[in-house]
Amino acid sequence: MEPVGLKEIKSKAPFTLPPLPFSKEALEPHVSKNTVLFHYEKHHQTYVNTANQLISGSQFENAELEQVIKATSENPEFSKLFNNAAQVWNHWFYWSCFDPRGAKSPPLKVQSAIESAFGSVEQFKNEFSAAATAQFGSGYAWLVQEGENLRVITSSNAQSPIALNVKPLLGLDVWEHAYYLDYQNRRKDYVGAFVNNMINWEFVEYNMER
Ligand code: MN
Image (cartoon, rainbow, N blue to C red; front, side):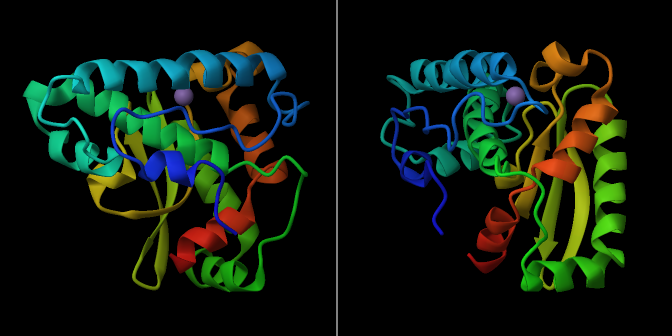
């Protein structure tokens, strides 16, 4: 099933904010409506607006988002554009990783890949949670696929799988703005709520197959 917002994320500049794939209160009680409202309507929207302002009149007019991210990565002249463009993509991916219907089991194909890589789904959850909790400062935890193998990585600030040339299956925003209103300093509880109640396994499967 094609994820919501794919059309917006694959379109050319100027970019538009991809629709949220669920209602703002859909993640309660784990992530509050207030957190989603600020995170989506303020943070995510601002990354879109700032990227568009920086692109206007530049060589990136009419470029696709992923092209912008790749071309500006590790180029100090374009660090502000990289950060904002990468955050547009990262947040689209992040919202897609939530299943508001509650805890589900992974589809068989995903489950067997996870068992090969981590031993069990529980072991994967433990490893992902530990990485997300230990990431120092702002960033993300990702489940990525390399050939047949899966592994967990983290990235700092706006760094994106698009720039790292890895294939992401799942991603979790651990910037304080993602959880501070609900969990304050307790990032571990936010991460635990995600891995135990909200992973969108269908999106993981979609990413494995694309
Ligand atoms: Mn964020």
